[in-house]
Image: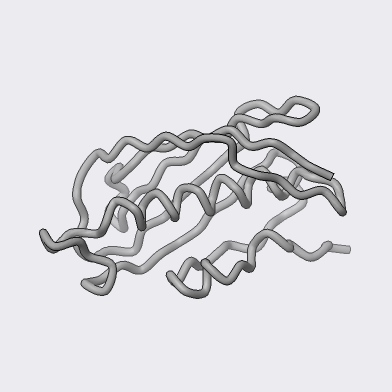
Length: 134
């Protein structure tokens, strides 16, 4: 029986338009998440490209979901830090953020994410550290 994916639905996800792929048992065991975002001019900066903060939010959401999926019921987490490298600008596309937990200790996990566009081109790469709390 599949348990609910409580980290996949957040108010910020609805506000920005994140679309979270449902978790499999393997996703929970390995700490994996895939999040999509269809971007258009509503998410642009003054130069007509997707705002970097939107890309950072997409990366943070996907990495948080990946880490959160590995937690026990009743555990929460916080992001400790986040780094992002922007590879290329984007105006319109369906973006896909694929995140995986690279390493998890008792309380701290290290997570990576790559954001690609609908053509498979790398848009951004991000890493973060998360800490679990009870």
